Amino acid sequence: MLDRVRTLDRVRTYYQVNPTRAILIGVGAVVLTPTIISLLKPVAKATVKTGVTLYEKTKGTIAESGEALADIVAEAKAEVAKEKAEQAAQRTALIAEVKSVDS
Image (tube, helix red, strand yellow):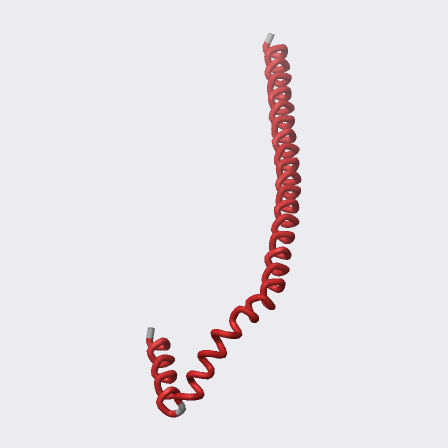
């Protein structure tokens, strides 16, 4: 807010010192704005196009990373399930062995 006040004070001071030049700058800005916009439009369009392209590539990369991570998680879950099954089989075999020794 304070910067805006300072800027307005500078413009007011500049206008008071040299009103003709300040008016010419204002008129020049109004006249040149459409030309500047038409020159900057292709640059802005190219920038947006590049952004969209990067977004699409990033989106694909993130999807691939997500698939790879899902594969890793699935493999880890399968290994955990296999280890649990092996442990259960070992317990069952141990219990059967203990029962056969007790008999």
